[in-house]
Length: 294
Length: 220
Image 1 (spheres, chains in turn yellow, red):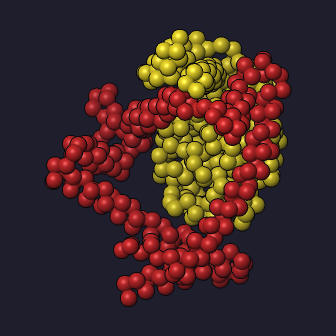
Image 2: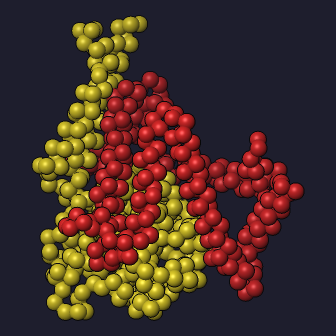
Protein backbone atom coordinates (compact mmCIF):
# COMPACT_ATOMS: atom_id res chain seq x y z
CA UNK A 1 0.00 0.00 0.00
CA UNK A 2 2.86 2.30 0.91
CA UNK A 3 4.33 1.65 -2.47
CA UNK A 4 1.08 2.70 -4.14
CA UNK A 5 0.98 6.16 -2.47
CA UNK A 6 4.67 6.76 -3.13
CA UNK A 7 4.19 5.80 -6.75
CA UNK A 8 1.16 8.05 -6.96
CA UNK A 9 3.22 11.01 -5.78
CA UNK A 10 5.80 10.33 -8.44
CA UNK A 11 3.19 9.81 -11.16
CA UNK A 12 4.54 10.35 -14.66
CA UNK A 13 3.37 13.78 -15.79
CA UNK A 14 2.26 12.37 -19.14
CA UNK A 15 -0.68 10.67 -17.38
CA UNK A 16 -1.69 14.07 -16.04
CA UNK A 17 -1.37 15.58 -19.50
CA UNK A 18 -3.55 12.81 -20.91
CA UNK A 19 -6.29 13.42 -18.34
CA UNK A 20 -6.19 17.18 -18.97
CA UNK A 21 -6.40 16.59 -22.70
CA UNK A 22 -9.41 14.31 -22.26
CA UNK A 23 -11.30 16.61 -19.87
CA UNK A 24 -10.77 19.53 -22.25
CA UNK A 25 -11.52 17.72 -25.50
CA UNK A 26 -14.49 15.52 -24.59
CA UNK A 27 -16.74 18.38 -23.31
CA UNK A 28 -15.78 20.44 -26.36
CA UNK A 29 -17.14 17.66 -28.59
CA UNK A 30 -20.06 16.76 -26.30
CA UNK A 31 -20.84 19.95 -24.34
CA UNK A 32 -23.29 19.86 -21.45
CA UNK A 33 -25.91 22.56 -21.08
CA UNK A 34 -24.89 25.53 -18.97
CA UNK A 35 -26.99 28.58 -18.10
CA UNK A 36 -24.54 31.12 -16.69
CA UNK A 37 -25.73 33.50 -13.97
CA UNK A 38 -24.34 37.01 -14.33
CA UNK A 39 -22.08 38.26 -11.54
CA UNK A 40 -22.38 41.94 -10.48
CA UNK A 41 -19.39 43.25 -12.54
CA UNK A 42 -20.76 41.62 -15.72
CA UNK A 43 -24.31 42.79 -15.09
CA UNK A 44 -23.04 46.28 -14.40
CA UNK A 45 -21.11 46.52 -17.70
CA UNK A 46 -24.04 45.08 -19.62
CA UNK A 47 -26.47 47.57 -18.08
CA UNK A 48 -24.12 50.46 -18.76
CA UNK A 49 -23.79 49.68 -22.47
CA UNK A 50 -27.47 48.83 -22.76
CA UNK A 51 -28.63 52.16 -21.37
CA UNK A 52 -25.97 54.39 -22.93
CA UNK A 53 -27.39 57.54 -24.58
CA UNK A 54 -28.14 56.97 -28.26
CA UNK A 55 -25.63 59.57 -29.43
CA UNK A 56 -22.77 57.96 -27.55
CA UNK A 57 -20.48 55.37 -29.11
CA UNK A 58 -18.83 52.27 -27.73
CA UNK A 59 -15.06 52.19 -28.14
CA UNK A 60 -13.36 48.82 -27.88
CA UNK A 61 -9.62 48.54 -27.47
CA UNK A 62 -8.18 45.17 -28.45
CA UNK A 63 -5.31 44.87 -26.03
CA UNK A 64 -4.49 41.22 -26.55
CA UNK A 65 -2.68 38.96 -28.97
CA UNK A 66 -3.83 35.67 -30.56
CA UNK A 67 -2.39 33.70 -27.62
CA UNK A 68 -5.37 34.83 -25.50
CA UNK A 69 -7.90 34.74 -28.30
CA UNK A 70 -9.72 31.63 -27.02
CA UNK A 71 -10.53 33.36 -23.75
CA UNK A 72 -11.05 36.93 -24.91
CA UNK A 73 -12.51 36.73 -28.41
CA UNK A 74 -16.00 35.69 -27.15
CA UNK A 75 -16.04 38.95 -25.13
CA UNK A 76 -15.15 41.03 -28.17
CA UNK A 77 -17.83 39.32 -30.26
CA UNK A 78 -20.47 39.75 -27.53
CA UNK A 79 -19.63 43.44 -27.05
CA UNK A 80 -19.85 44.11 -30.79
CA UNK A 81 -23.15 42.25 -31.05
CA UNK A 82 -24.54 44.19 -28.12
CA UNK A 83 -23.57 47.57 -29.54
CA UNK A 84 -25.02 46.80 -32.97
CA UNK A 85 -28.18 45.27 -31.43
CA UNK A 86 -28.91 48.50 -29.55
CA UNK A 87 -27.86 50.65 -32.55
CA UNK A 88 -24.82 52.28 -31.04
CA UNK A 89 -21.84 53.38 -33.11
CA UNK A 90 -18.65 51.44 -32.52
CA UNK A 91 -15.00 52.45 -32.79
CA UNK A 92 -12.38 49.74 -32.55
CA UNK A 93 -8.64 50.12 -32.10
CA UNK A 94 -5.79 47.87 -31.14
CA UNK A 95 -3.04 48.75 -28.72
CA UNK A 96 -1.36 45.39 -29.35
CA UNK A 97 -0.08 45.23 -32.93
CA UNK A 98 -0.67 41.49 -32.92
CA UNK A 99 -4.34 42.10 -32.20
CA UNK A 100 -4.99 43.77 -35.55
CA UNK A 101 -6.14 40.63 -37.35
CA UNK A 102 -8.36 39.68 -34.40
CA UNK A 103 -10.29 42.93 -34.72
CA UNK A 104 -10.66 42.53 -38.47
CA UNK A 105 -11.95 38.97 -38.03
CA UNK A 106 -14.42 39.88 -35.28
CA UNK A 107 -15.82 42.92 -37.09
CA UNK A 108 -16.22 40.98 -40.30
CA UNK A 109 -18.04 38.15 -38.50
CA UNK A 110 -20.44 40.31 -36.48
CA UNK A 111 -21.18 42.69 -39.38
CA UNK A 112 -22.02 39.66 -41.56
CA UNK A 113 -24.35 38.28 -38.86
CA UNK A 114 -26.32 41.52 -38.70
CA UNK A 115 -26.26 42.15 -42.44
CA UNK A 116 -27.59 38.67 -43.18
CA UNK A 117 -30.70 39.53 -41.12
CA UNK A 118 -31.04 43.14 -42.31
CA UNK A 119 -34.18 44.00 -44.23
CA UNK A 120 -33.35 47.63 -44.99
CA UNK A 121 -30.21 49.66 -45.44
CA UNK A 122 -30.84 51.21 -42.02
CA UNK A 123 -30.75 47.74 -40.42
CA UNK A 124 -27.38 46.97 -41.98
CA UNK A 125 -24.10 47.39 -40.19
CA UNK A 126 -21.72 49.29 -42.45
CA UNK A 127 -18.06 50.12 -42.16
CA UNK A 128 -17.59 53.87 -41.90
CA UNK A 129 -21.21 54.52 -41.01
CA UNK A 130 -21.92 52.24 -38.03
CA UNK A 131 -18.41 51.26 -37.09
CA UNK A 132 -14.86 52.27 -37.72
CA UNK A 133 -11.74 50.19 -37.33
CA UNK A 134 -8.94 52.62 -36.57
CA UNK A 135 -6.28 49.92 -36.38
CA UNK A 136 -3.02 50.37 -34.55
CA UNK A 137 -0.51 53.09 -33.95
CA UNK A 138 2.28 53.59 -31.48
CA UNK A 139 3.20 54.55 -28.78
CA UNK A 140 0.20 53.76 -26.61
CA UNK A 141 0.57 56.95 -24.56
CA UNK A 142 0.02 58.98 -27.72
CA UNK A 143 -3.10 56.95 -28.49
CA UNK A 144 -4.66 57.09 -25.03
CA UNK A 145 -4.03 60.80 -24.51
CA UNK A 146 -4.44 61.92 -28.13
CA UNK A 147 -7.87 60.32 -28.54
CA UNK A 148 -9.12 62.58 -25.79
CA UNK A 149 -8.42 65.59 -27.99
CA UNK A 150 -8.97 64.44 -31.58
CA UNK A 151 -9.20 60.83 -32.68
CA UNK A 152 -8.62 61.67 -36.35
CA UNK A 153 -5.26 63.22 -35.44
CA UNK A 154 -4.16 60.01 -33.74
CA UNK A 155 -5.49 57.82 -36.56
CA UNK A 156 -5.31 59.89 -39.78
CA UNK A 157 -6.25 56.73 -41.75
CA UNK A 158 -8.19 53.68 -40.61
CA UNK A 159 -7.09 50.03 -40.80
CA UNK A 160 -8.19 49.86 -44.46
CA UNK A 161 -6.30 52.99 -45.43
CA UNK A 162 -9.34 55.27 -45.71
CA UNK A 163 -8.99 58.82 -44.40
CA UNK A 164 -10.78 58.79 -41.06
CA UNK A 165 -11.97 62.39 -41.43
CA UNK A 166 -13.89 61.33 -44.55
CA UNK A 167 -15.90 58.61 -42.75
CA UNK A 168 -19.48 59.60 -41.81
CA UNK A 169 -19.16 58.01 -38.35
CA UNK A 170 -16.29 60.33 -37.47
CA UNK A 171 -18.61 63.33 -37.59
CA UNK A 172 -20.19 61.94 -34.42
CA UNK A 173 -17.05 60.47 -32.89
CA UNK A 174 -14.44 63.18 -32.53
CA UNK A 175 -12.98 62.38 -29.11
CA UNK A 176 -13.81 60.76 -25.77
CA UNK A 177 -16.70 63.20 -25.23
CA UNK A 178 -18.60 61.32 -27.95
CA UNK A 179 -17.97 57.92 -26.39
CA UNK A 180 -20.28 56.43 -23.78
CA UNK A 181 -17.69 53.96 -22.62
CA UNK A 182 -14.37 52.48 -23.67
CA UNK A 183 -13.91 48.79 -23.00
CA UNK A 184 -10.36 47.47 -22.91
CA UNK A 185 -10.32 43.75 -23.72
CA UNK A 186 -6.89 42.83 -22.50
CA UNK A 187 -4.45 40.12 -21.61
CA UNK A 188 -1.99 42.65 -20.24
CA UNK A 189 -1.89 45.66 -17.90
CA UNK A 190 -3.26 48.08 -20.53
CA UNK A 191 -6.60 48.57 -18.69
CA UNK A 192 -4.62 50.28 -15.93
CA UNK A 193 -2.96 52.55 -18.49
CA UNK A 194 -6.42 53.48 -19.78
CA UNK A 195 -7.32 54.50 -16.23
CA UNK A 196 -4.08 56.41 -15.67
CA UNK A 197 -4.05 58.25 -18.97
CA UNK A 198 -7.54 58.40 -20.48
CA UNK A 199 -9.84 58.37 -17.46
CA UNK A 200 -7.78 60.55 -15.15
CA UNK A 201 -7.33 63.30 -17.74
CA UNK A 202 -10.54 63.08 -19.76
CA UNK A 203 -13.00 61.35 -17.43
CA UNK A 204 -14.09 58.70 -19.92
CA UNK A 205 -16.07 55.76 -18.52
CA UNK A 206 -14.13 52.53 -18.74
CA UNK A 207 -14.97 48.86 -18.78
CA UNK A 208 -12.62 45.93 -18.76
CA UNK A 209 -12.54 42.45 -20.24
CA UNK A 210 -9.62 40.41 -19.01
CA UNK A 211 -8.24 36.90 -18.68
CA UNK A 212 -9.41 35.08 -15.55
CA UNK A 213 -5.90 35.01 -14.17
CA UNK A 214 -5.62 38.81 -14.18
CA UNK A 215 -9.13 39.52 -12.85
CA UNK A 216 -7.84 39.75 -9.28
CA UNK A 217 -5.65 42.71 -10.32
CA UNK A 218 -8.65 44.69 -11.54
CA UNK A 219 -11.15 44.15 -8.73
CA UNK A 220 -9.89 47.22 -6.80
CA UNK A 221 -10.78 49.36 -9.81
CA UNK A 222 -14.22 47.80 -10.18
CA UNK A 223 -14.90 48.45 -6.48
CA UNK A 224 -13.76 52.06 -6.77
CA UNK A 225 -16.05 52.61 -9.77
CA UNK A 226 -13.15 53.38 -12.12
CA UNK A 227 -14.30 50.41 -14.19
CA UNK A 228 -18.03 50.51 -14.82
CA UNK A 229 -17.96 46.74 -15.06
CA UNK A 230 -15.71 43.82 -15.85
CA UNK A 231 -15.80 40.54 -17.73
CA UNK A 232 -13.31 38.09 -16.33
CA UNK A 233 -12.25 35.12 -18.40
CA UNK A 234 -14.42 32.66 -20.26
CA UNK A 235 -16.96 32.78 -17.44
CA UNK A 236 -17.41 36.53 -17.84
CA UNK A 237 -17.89 36.12 -21.58
CA UNK A 238 -20.45 33.33 -21.06
CA UNK A 239 -22.41 35.46 -18.57
CA UNK A 240 -22.42 38.40 -20.99
CA UNK A 241 -23.59 36.13 -23.82
CA UNK A 242 -26.47 34.93 -21.63
CA UNK A 243 -27.59 38.49 -20.86
CA UNK A 244 -27.20 39.49 -24.50
CA UNK A 245 -29.19 36.54 -25.84
CA UNK A 246 -32.12 37.46 -23.60
CA UNK A 247 -31.82 41.11 -24.61
CA UNK A 248 -31.73 40.30 -28.32
CA UNK A 249 -34.69 37.93 -27.97
CA UNK A 250 -36.71 40.79 -26.45
CA UNK A 251 -36.18 42.85 -29.60
CA UNK A 252 -36.97 40.01 -32.00
CA UNK A 253 -33.34 39.18 -32.75
CA UNK A 254 -33.64 35.56 -31.73
CA UNK A 255 -31.11 34.44 -34.33
CA UNK A 256 -29.56 31.51 -32.48
CA UNK A 257 -26.06 32.91 -32.80
CA UNK A 258 -23.16 30.77 -31.63
CA UNK A 259 -22.04 31.48 -28.07
CA UNK A 260 -18.43 30.36 -28.04
CA UNK A 261 -17.86 31.53 -24.46
CA UNK A 262 -20.75 29.41 -23.16
CA UNK A 263 -19.77 26.45 -25.36
CA UNK A 264 -16.27 26.46 -23.91
CA UNK A 265 -17.54 26.62 -20.32
CA UNK A 266 -18.21 22.85 -20.33
CA UNK A 267 -14.57 22.26 -21.05
CA UNK A 268 -13.44 24.79 -18.47
CA UNK A 269 -15.75 23.32 -15.81
CA UNK A 270 -14.38 19.82 -16.44
CA UNK A 271 -10.78 21.09 -16.37
CA UNK A 272 -11.37 22.90 -13.07
CA UNK A 273 -12.84 19.76 -11.53
CA UNK A 274 -9.94 17.66 -12.81
CA UNK A 275 -7.41 20.06 -11.30
CA UNK A 276 -9.30 20.03 -7.99
CA UNK A 277 -9.25 16.22 -8.08
CA UNK A 278 -5.49 16.27 -8.82
CA UNK A 279 -4.86 18.55 -5.85
CA UNK A 280 -6.94 16.37 -3.51
CA UNK A 281 -5.26 13.13 -4.66
CA UNK A 282 -1.82 14.75 -4.47
CA UNK A 283 -2.48 15.94 -0.91
CA UNK A 284 -3.86 12.59 0.26
CA UNK A 285 -0.76 10.85 -1.10
CA UNK A 286 1.47 13.49 0.49
CA UNK A 287 -0.09 13.15 3.97
CA UNK A 288 -0.17 9.36 3.96
CA UNK A 289 3.46 9.02 2.91
CA UNK A 290 4.53 11.71 5.41
CA UNK A 291 2.68 10.04 8.30
CA UNK A 292 4.18 6.65 7.49
CA UNK A 293 7.66 8.12 7.20
CA UNK A 294 7.36 9.82 10.60
CA UNK B 1 29.27 64.99 -23.13
CA UNK B 2 27.99 61.59 -24.35
CA UNK B 3 26.39 61.09 -20.96
CA UNK B 4 25.45 64.65 -20.17
CA UNK B 5 23.28 65.29 -23.25
CA UNK B 6 20.97 62.27 -22.67
CA UNK B 7 20.70 63.22 -18.99
CA UNK B 8 19.71 66.80 -19.86
CA UNK B 9 17.19 65.55 -22.46
CA UNK B 10 15.59 63.21 -19.92
CA UNK B 11 15.45 65.91 -17.27
CA UNK B 12 13.89 68.53 -19.55
CA UNK B 13 11.36 66.29 -21.32
CA UNK B 14 10.47 64.42 -18.13
CA UNK B 15 9.80 67.59 -16.16
CA UNK B 16 7.92 69.11 -19.08
CA UNK B 17 5.69 66.01 -19.34
CA UNK B 18 4.84 66.23 -15.66
CA UNK B 19 4.35 70.02 -15.64
CA UNK B 20 2.08 69.95 -18.72
CA UNK B 21 -0.28 67.73 -16.79
CA UNK B 22 -0.93 70.54 -14.29
CA UNK B 23 -0.92 73.64 -16.54
CA UNK B 24 -3.97 73.95 -18.78
CA UNK B 25 -2.61 76.99 -20.70
CA UNK B 26 -3.09 76.45 -24.44
CA UNK B 27 0.57 77.06 -25.37
CA UNK B 28 1.75 74.40 -22.92
CA UNK B 29 -0.99 72.01 -24.03
CA UNK B 30 -0.16 72.59 -27.71
CA UNK B 31 3.52 71.88 -27.05
CA UNK B 32 2.56 68.79 -25.06
CA UNK B 33 0.30 67.55 -27.87
CA UNK B 34 3.08 68.08 -30.39
CA UNK B 35 5.48 66.15 -28.18
CA UNK B 36 3.05 63.27 -27.93
CA UNK B 37 1.74 63.16 -31.47
CA UNK B 38 4.87 64.05 -33.42
CA UNK B 39 8.04 63.64 -31.39
CA UNK B 40 7.05 60.39 -29.67
CA UNK B 41 5.94 58.84 -32.95
CA UNK B 42 9.19 59.78 -34.66
CA UNK B 43 11.12 58.23 -31.78
CA UNK B 44 8.88 55.12 -31.97
CA UNK B 45 9.59 54.85 -35.73
CA UNK B 46 13.32 54.98 -35.04
CA UNK B 47 12.97 52.35 -32.33
CA UNK B 48 11.28 50.07 -34.87
CA UNK B 49 14.26 50.42 -37.21
CA UNK B 50 16.56 49.79 -34.27
CA UNK B 51 14.54 46.70 -33.26
CA UNK B 52 14.59 45.19 -36.76
CA UNK B 53 18.29 45.98 -37.11
CA UNK B 54 19.01 44.40 -33.76
CA UNK B 55 17.10 41.19 -34.45
CA UNK B 56 18.73 40.83 -37.89
CA UNK B 57 22.21 41.45 -36.48
CA UNK B 58 21.60 38.89 -33.72
CA UNK B 59 20.42 36.17 -36.08
CA UNK B 60 22.98 36.81 -38.82
CA UNK B 61 25.70 36.52 -36.17
CA UNK B 62 24.22 33.18 -35.07
CA UNK B 63 24.12 31.97 -38.67
CA UNK B 64 27.65 33.15 -39.36
CA UNK B 65 29.08 31.48 -36.27
CA UNK B 66 26.98 28.33 -36.68
CA UNK B 67 25.96 28.44 -33.00
CA UNK B 68 23.45 25.95 -31.56
CA UNK B 69 20.17 25.80 -33.55
CA UNK B 70 21.45 28.36 -36.06
CA UNK B 71 19.07 26.93 -38.69
CA UNK B 72 16.09 28.40 -36.83
CA UNK B 73 17.59 31.86 -37.26
CA UNK B 74 16.94 31.51 -40.98
CA UNK B 75 13.27 30.83 -40.17
CA UNK B 76 13.09 34.09 -38.19
CA UNK B 77 14.86 36.14 -40.87
CA UNK B 78 12.84 34.74 -43.78
CA UNK B 79 9.53 35.05 -41.85
CA UNK B 80 10.34 38.63 -40.91
CA UNK B 81 11.14 39.54 -44.50
CA UNK B 82 8.15 37.73 -46.08
CA UNK B 83 5.57 39.07 -43.60
CA UNK B 84 6.97 42.59 -43.93
CA UNK B 85 6.79 42.50 -47.75
CA UNK B 86 3.26 41.05 -47.76
CA UNK B 87 2.14 43.48 -45.03
CA UNK B 88 3.56 46.49 -46.85
CA UNK B 89 2.65 45.64 -50.44
CA UNK B 90 0.26 42.68 -50.44
CA UNK B 91 -3.01 44.08 -49.13
CA UNK B 92 -5.15 42.95 -46.23
CA UNK B 93 -7.50 40.50 -47.97
CA UNK B 94 -8.83 39.70 -51.49
CA UNK B 95 -11.33 42.57 -51.22
CA UNK B 96 -8.52 45.04 -50.61
CA UNK B 97 -5.62 43.95 -52.82
CA UNK B 98 -2.24 45.65 -52.70
CA UNK B 99 0.27 46.22 -55.47
CA UNK B 100 1.80 42.77 -54.93
CA UNK B 101 -0.21 39.74 -56.13
CA UNK B 102 -0.97 37.60 -53.07
CA UNK B 103 -2.64 34.56 -54.57
CA UNK B 104 -1.67 31.71 -56.84
CA UNK B 105 -4.86 30.31 -58.35
CA UNK B 106 -7.22 29.70 -55.43
CA UNK B 107 -4.35 29.67 -52.93
CA UNK B 108 -4.13 33.06 -51.28
CA UNK B 109 -1.50 34.30 -48.89
CA UNK B 110 -2.60 37.84 -48.10
CA UNK B 111 -2.06 39.27 -44.62
CA UNK B 112 -5.32 38.16 -42.99
CA UNK B 113 -4.96 34.58 -44.30
CA UNK B 114 -1.41 34.34 -43.00
CA UNK B 115 -2.54 35.81 -39.70
CA UNK B 116 -5.56 33.55 -39.17
CA UNK B 117 -3.87 30.37 -40.37
CA UNK B 118 -0.39 30.75 -38.95
CA UNK B 119 -0.17 33.39 -36.26
CA UNK B 120 -3.40 32.48 -34.45
CA UNK B 121 -2.94 28.68 -34.23
CA UNK B 122 0.77 28.97 -33.36
CA UNK B 123 0.16 31.49 -30.58
CA UNK B 124 -2.88 29.60 -29.27
CA UNK B 125 -0.91 26.33 -29.22
CA UNK B 126 1.91 27.86 -27.21
CA UNK B 127 -0.49 29.41 -24.71
CA UNK B 128 -2.67 26.30 -24.35
CA UNK B 129 0.35 24.32 -23.14
CA UNK B 130 -0.03 26.32 -19.94
CA UNK B 131 -3.08 24.25 -18.93
CA UNK B 132 -0.99 21.06 -18.97
CA UNK B 133 1.85 22.57 -16.96
CA UNK B 134 -0.61 24.09 -14.47
CA UNK B 135 -2.35 20.76 -13.89
CA UNK B 136 0.98 19.01 -13.42
CA UNK B 137 2.25 21.72 -11.06
CA UNK B 138 -1.01 21.65 -9.07
CA UNK B 139 -0.66 17.90 -8.60
CA UNK B 140 2.96 18.04 -7.50
CA UNK B 141 3.39 21.31 -5.64
CA UNK B 142 0.03 22.44 -4.24
CA UNK B 143 0.33 20.91 -0.76
CA UNK B 144 -1.32 21.89 2.53
CA UNK B 145 2.06 21.89 4.30
CA UNK B 146 1.25 24.69 6.79
CA UNK B 147 -1.52 27.15 7.73
CA UNK B 148 -0.73 29.68 4.97
CA UNK B 149 -0.59 27.00 2.29
CA UNK B 150 -3.88 25.53 3.55
CA UNK B 151 -5.51 28.96 3.41
CA UNK B 152 -4.27 29.44 -0.14
CA UNK B 153 -5.55 26.00 -1.07
CA UNK B 154 -8.98 26.69 0.42
CA UNK B 155 -9.27 30.02 -1.41
CA UNK B 156 -8.22 28.36 -4.67
CA UNK B 157 -10.85 25.64 -4.19
CA UNK B 158 -13.60 28.19 -3.58
CA UNK B 159 -12.57 30.28 -6.61
CA UNK B 160 -12.24 27.32 -8.94
CA UNK B 161 -15.56 25.83 -7.87
CA UNK B 162 -17.21 29.25 -7.87
CA UNK B 163 -16.16 29.72 -11.48
CA UNK B 164 -18.01 26.64 -12.73
CA UNK B 165 -21.74 25.81 -12.63
CA UNK B 166 -21.12 22.78 -10.41
CA UNK B 167 -20.14 25.12 -7.58
CA UNK B 168 -23.65 26.57 -7.48
CA UNK B 169 -25.11 23.04 -7.53
CA UNK B 170 -22.93 21.86 -4.63
CA UNK B 171 -23.55 24.93 -2.47
CA UNK B 172 -25.76 27.72 -3.80
CA UNK B 173 -23.96 30.72 -2.22
CA UNK B 174 -20.52 29.45 -3.33
CA UNK B 175 -20.20 31.72 -6.44
CA UNK B 176 -21.18 34.72 -4.30
CA UNK B 177 -18.57 33.73 -1.73
CA UNK B 178 -15.97 33.44 -4.51
CA UNK B 179 -16.97 36.89 -5.71
CA UNK B 180 -16.65 38.21 -2.14
CA UNK B 181 -13.11 36.81 -1.84
CA UNK B 182 -12.12 38.69 -5.00
CA UNK B 183 -13.98 41.88 -4.15
CA UNK B 184 -13.01 42.27 -0.48
CA UNK B 185 -9.90 40.46 0.86
CA UNK B 186 -8.24 40.42 -2.58
CA UNK B 187 -8.98 44.12 -3.14
CA UNK B 188 -7.62 45.04 0.28
CA UNK B 189 -4.38 43.16 -0.36
CA UNK B 190 -4.05 44.45 -3.92
CA UNK B 191 -4.51 48.07 -2.84
CA UNK B 192 -1.73 47.74 -0.28
CA UNK B 193 0.58 46.14 -2.86
CA UNK B 194 -0.34 48.77 -5.48
CA UNK B 195 0.45 51.64 -3.11
CA UNK B 196 3.87 50.13 -2.54
CA UNK B 197 4.48 49.61 -6.26
CA UNK B 198 3.37 53.13 -7.18
CA UNK B 199 5.60 54.70 -4.53
CA UNK B 200 8.47 52.62 -5.87
CA UNK B 201 7.75 53.76 -9.44
CA UNK B 202 7.60 57.39 -8.31
CA UNK B 203 10.90 57.13 -6.48
CA UNK B 204 12.62 55.36 -9.39
CA UNK B 205 11.21 57.88 -11.91
CA UNK B 206 12.55 60.77 -9.84
CA UNK B 207 15.93 59.10 -9.57
CA UNK B 208 16.06 58.68 -13.37
CA UNK B 209 14.89 62.26 -14.03
CA UNK B 210 17.44 63.71 -11.64
CA UNK B 211 20.24 61.56 -13.03
CA UNK B 212 20.80 59.61 -9.80
CA UNK B 213 19.87 56.33 -11.47
CA UNK B 214 21.89 55.99 -14.69
CA UNK B 215 21.63 52.28 -15.44
CA UNK B 216 19.55 53.02 -18.55
CA UNK B 217 22.56 54.78 -20.13
CA UNK B 218 24.30 51.41 -20.35
CA UNK B 219 27.90 50.70 -19.62
CA UNK B 220 27.22 49.33 -16.12
